Every structure is written in structure tokens, then in C-alpha cells.
Image (tube, rainbow, N blue to C red; front, side):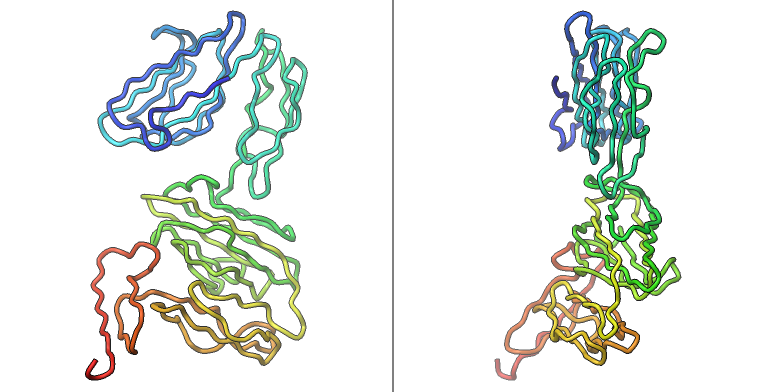
Length: 375
């Protein structure tokens, strides 16, 4: 067993490359390749896998772009990998694991990322099963595969199962996870993903942001208080600034994640759960990022107010009132670092717009600092 990595993986392999790897196992055995990660400049940088040690050996596959290839198995005891990169741009590269096996057994399928495998016998006639972890769905293959003999070759009955985070879906379980596509890796460009979370009638939905990091200003997650895009907006989030949690006022929440065509990030991990509304109070409204909350009584008729850390400004200063319908009078305010403004007092803090995230382009901000006369 071993690993083949592109030059300088995962930092990017550079340009003008022509690399060759030869994998040789014992005569009578075969070689299996598992692609753990794959990201090349599409259409210009290529990896070719050949069944033998010669440049003229049969080609098992030629790969480019960011789609992770399927597993490959040799017909002999030698594999040749040829990697070519042109003079411009590059990707993350590739990470490939190889292992050898006998002629009366199937190759070790490995344990798919984001999944659990059941079964460790790969002899002819044996089966293994794969179950996706919470938040992931099967993107390739079936739950169970069997080592069979077909056309004189020992092979698995289907492709090795894979699990991935879906771009959208309808969820009605009492609790679960919503993950950005590609999690825990980077999400792709030009996405438009829609999720609908549905609870039992009479219940509310609480979503908790466990992780959140998107491209500032351009890759946006919208959360709506209802079953579709026309429902009231609870919040629109990008960068890393999100509330600790949000609540719906009905038994539906709708999420829309859109990304532009450049740059990406790790995305998000969101936990959701169905909750019962207390007859005499509102649900915890949360605390703004970079802010503080005043008041811990959430009973009907009570109010809570908020303030921001130095340098940030509250989006609206009106206190939240717990109304008779068990919902707050308006949404949780945000604490924002704005472009310009008046600063008064003996001391204070000035933050660039969006801080601590990167500031947007095309800004022209002016701050006026006013202190006591004569100072």
C-alpha cells in the first residue's frame, strides 16, 4: 500500500510539468487505485493511468478538472501514471492511494469519505455495505456491493459507494444536519441550492450555525421564515458573521445558498431541530455577533435590548417585545462595521467595513471624530 501525490500537494503543483510514476507489485497480483482528492486545471492539465509500464500500454483512464475519478484496477501487476501540466494556472493536485491484491479477491474498496463501512472480507462471494454519515447522501453506487466473477475477472458488483453533501433537499426528520455541497471541503462555484425543513404542525424549527465561512459579499445563504423564497427573510449571511441560532415562526424554514463563479470556502454546517413553543413565552432570540443582550425574561410582554462591541453599530435599536402570538416583534438585530460615520466621545474604535472580514471593493468611507472642544 502506498500514496501518490502531485508535486507540492495540496498547495498547487505549478506549471510546465511532465511527471511519470510506475507502480510495480508482485507478479500474479493486481493494483487498485483510490482517488482521495483530485483538482486539476480543466481541459489543460491531465492525469493518464496506463495498464503497464510502457508509454504505449492500454489507457485505463485520462482525467482532468475537479471531479474525483472512480476507483481503478489494473489487469496486470504494473501501473503507469503520467501527469502533464501546461504553462498557466494550476489546481490543488491529487492524492491517490494504491494497494495490491490477489486474483481470487476484490481490491480493498477503502472506507469512503463521510461514511462507515461494514465488512472486511474481500474474497470472491463476500459483500460489504456502506452507510453515509449524518448530513450526507449516497452520490454513487448502492449500499451493498459483492465480490463477483464476471467475464473471467474478479470484481465488485458495482461502483464503490460514495457519500456527499447534497445541493438542496426536503427534510422532515425531528433533527438533522444541513451541509454545504462538498463539505468538509470547499463548495463549488455557481451553485443555487435550496433546502426546505418541515416540522410537525404546531412546532417551530431551531437552526444552529455550528460552522460558517463563505466568500464575503458574493456567496450568500438566505434563511426564510416559511416554505419558499417568498416567505419573510430571517437573515442573509456571508463571510463568517452569523447568529448563534435562528427560530422559525411556523413549522417551515427555507434556505437558499447561491455562489458566484470565482473563489469558494469551507461553507457551513447547520444543525436543525423541531421545538415546541412555550404557551407563556417566546423562544430565546439569541445574541448578535459582536454584541450583547440585556434581559433574560422571555415571557409574553417582556422586552430584551442589545448593544454592540466598540466600533460596531446596531442595525436597529428598538427592543424586541415578546408578543401574545409567542413571537418577537422583529428579527434579531446585527452589529455591523459600517463605511464611515460620526464618532463622538473621549475615546472609541473605528473599524473598516465588514471587519474582521475583508472589506468590499470600490469603497470611499469618511469618518468624523468629534471630541470635547479644546482637546
